[in-house]
Image (tube, rainbow, N blue to C red; front, side):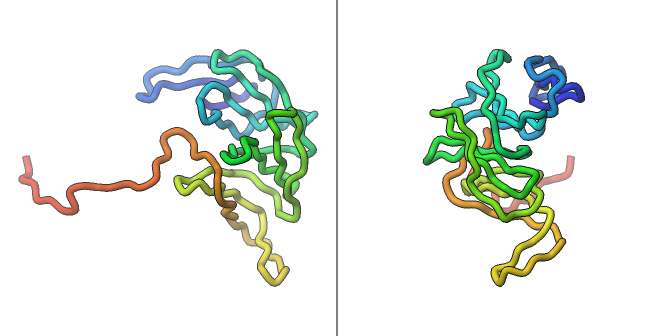
Length: 174
């Protein structure tokens, strides 16, 4: 799935042959990070339209609900142990979205503007930062990537160990 320019969410076939509309419930909204729930039944969207929120869309494209956030979200991920959604925010914070109580609260602060985020096969959340903070407290304007571990759910298609075989081969041309 991907977001069109007007907030419509589209889907594209794996072979890139066709695309279609997945949902129009967010038309006019400014969406950023998209993430399917671990069971694949719901799509979570970082909704940057004021008031800031996580928008949850059912697999059939209908609106499930909105959960308000204290800051403008960009990237998001699922934390397996807690069952919560975490959002990387533009103001250098991370929000925790409790899906049981439909509340979004401040989880961490002190970072820099966050943007791209993704969970790796190692179950860690990799988030970009528009700056670097060193262990001694000093900062730099150099961009950085922060690794937050453990317990995040990789998106579908991300695998752990990859084994290539054979280790070597000789093949005739033609």
